[in-house]
Length: 165
Image (cartoon, helix red, strand yellow):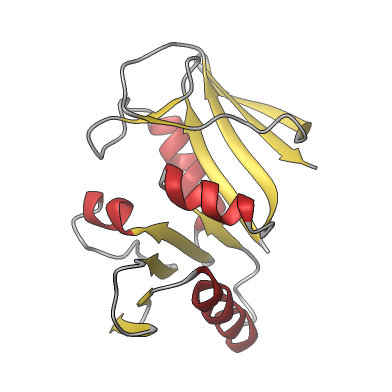
């Protein structure tokens, strides 16, 4: 199973022109501490927004439905897959081959979140809720059936909520 980790403004914005529409060192610190030594799965646009560079100290899996091969190895800690099934399988292999890897986090974008939620492959949402609105072209809304079971304040403008069905 996967965990979604996402930052969301009051009006549901998570991105603008393939980048984050805010700068929050506290949220970036939370993201890094949460995902370090684990697996991160991202869509192709998120991969492009990172400059096609894997996040360090994590196993990176890029979901690209346009990839002709099922799996393409980009580096020791980075692979590209062409289906949700392959992402699930590669995640399983990484978890089995490393005692340090505990979780797999979906880190964006909106289409990837939507697809994995639709396939019922998500067991937790970790949502940084920012107390401001901003302009954007990419949105995420917490599905109604998900309920918050824990919250923590990470800054004067942000609360992290942990959600499950």
